Length: 323
Image 1 (cartoon, one colour):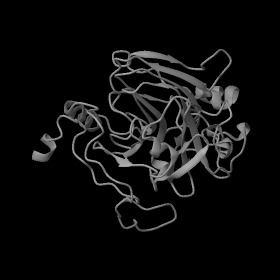
Image 2 (cartoon, rainbow, N blue to C red):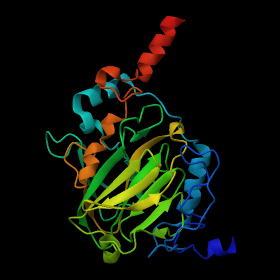
Image 3 (cartoon, helix red, strand yellow):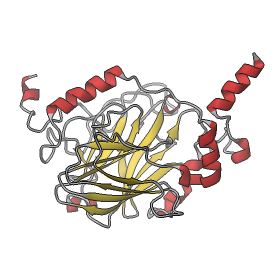
């Protein structure tokens, strides 16, 4: 623990081994792959102090006290919302009001379902905002679809602001950025480093890409988050170009998890974002075939609305009738 104490000024806690292959079976395999070091450069610390060590301990305590939620069927109201608005049904859940300092507007401008406006204040501490509907829903079907995808457009990102985009399972510590804790992945746009359950300094992502060469995202950049069903690959895009796979076999076995979109913000410095779940055309054109409503709520076989799985409330009602 002596070296952990040396990280107190950085506050990200202990470094965790990470690599290019997961320590669990990939889809279609019987045995776990050999663990291999990732080719990207690993970092013990972030570029600057990002969170106090106490937050790392608090995040670990939160995860210990709150086991991951099991996958679930959607309530009837959510099924109806998806039927009515498609991708526009996805929103960011209201953040902890004692934590988040800024503005969240689901729907963005009037009539723009599925485009969410986020603006954090300069004094906003590390805060994560999760989607209210899952992107990867363990009890729903994936056949006939390549994967799921969403995008975040940076409208403003001050020099000292932090933005992180990724995924997480609920419950997730509301005061920790995506990728730092259990069952969460994130790309941090202030230093272009990727994280998966990694409280240290992360790994350099996509070296040689325009985003990595810039060293951080800037106003006008669009960063997307995608998950491919066939390989379990989680990847990111930048201004319409797909970047290399960040993690393979993430969230395996898929049926065990509901995974949500995660957007993290922190000051000092103001940031303003638009989060697009597919109501507006994606900059990564292939992503327009990765619409989330084609997965969440669909029956096996990839049928339409009439083939939806029952909602949780409907399934519970049917069990009462059968009894």
